[in-house]
Length: 134
Image (tube, rainbow, N blue to C red; front, side, top):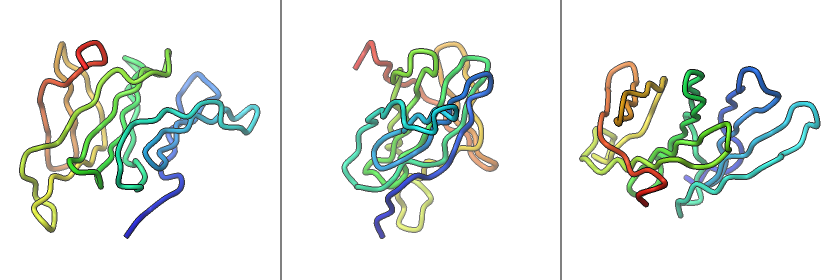
């Protein structure tokens, strides 16, 4: 089943902006003007929407998953510059219904040079490609 359209709203505290997952992109909406002020292409070819976003207020980083892509991936966006700073590919065999990797996140914590994605049952830790090394 193909899903398209906005999914998940993440309010960025201290701003008038909301980050919204959409088909292969993140839309940034300004609540003062009720308009999309920027669309950030995050890649992918499935035609499915990115979802399960979260925000790290300490580092001002928004993360969103693209769980229906092959392989699934997460995208990290610096909310100050509104630019992609990293992408994390989930290439290990997963526990989804077809054995495919699953990318679901409920919180985002950053540690030194490693990103940690956490869900209620799983933590995935691995170095990620940064925009400078891509």
